[in-house]
Amino acid sequence: MLDQSNPFTMLRLVSWVVWKIPSRRPLKMAGFSHTEAGSSLDMMDAAELAPTASLRKKYFRHALDEFRHSRLFHERAIALSRGSHAADVLEDAEYSASHGIRGETSLYERLGETEFLAFVWLHERQGARQFGLYADLMKHDAASSAMFAEICADEEYHVSYSRRELDRIEIQKGPREVRGAIRRLRLRRAREAFLRTSHGFGHVMAGLWLTVIYFGIVAPFSLAGRRSAPAAGLVATPGASARARLEYEVQG
Ligand SMILES: [Fe+2]
Ligand SMILES: [Fe+2]
Picture 1 (cartoon, rainbow, N blue to C red):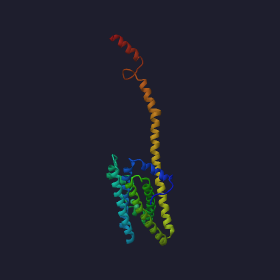
Picture 2: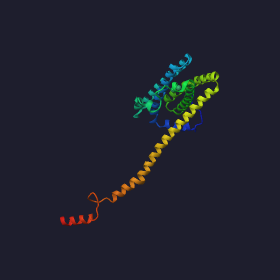
Picture 3: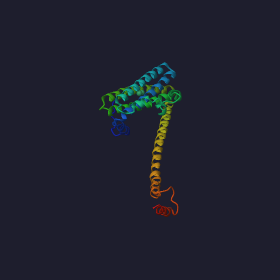
Picture 4: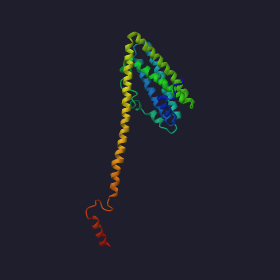
């Protein structure tokens, strides 16, 4: 489904900036390849641990979809990579750990059944929205646009099956079980976004202060030091210039 939303939303604006810069595209796709591979492993874990055969089957199919998405992004990143570092990003074995894609404990074990399904529903919904938008923004590159549209269709299936499972849990355990899980996830996501923003802000402020200190204190003192430095000798002592003149006259 192509994105038909308001052309001036923040998501669209940020996405436009990212996808309109040609050199960013392969790198972004290489990053997505890692994210989708991480999702595939999360779904594999869930397929092993789910309590019913029906859920195991759905999680397994979901894992295969995410694995395919990872390969599609990998191939597209290589196809678009002209002098970019996309291959380095794709081969970076530490990428998942350094970007918080996979933890040591499986996501399913950490969250439990309801919260895991709520996580899948929220994230797949966001993924479907983003990929629909990217398919629209990349219309000038038919292969990339078709890939995003294809992935978007899969993500929509993931949204619908996870929502159906949440509806089933609501009937079995009551609406508070599902609403509580969604609320906790949203709070966690907001806290993580705040920490990420604070971290970025901290970096910017540190850079700003270092620049101010350099140009306000270090550079003026360095300049003043150079101007008052003696023409000869290491230290200018009282009467040094008079002695130097005398030595010059004696030598002369
Ligand atoms: Fe995916
Ligand atoms: Fe997905």
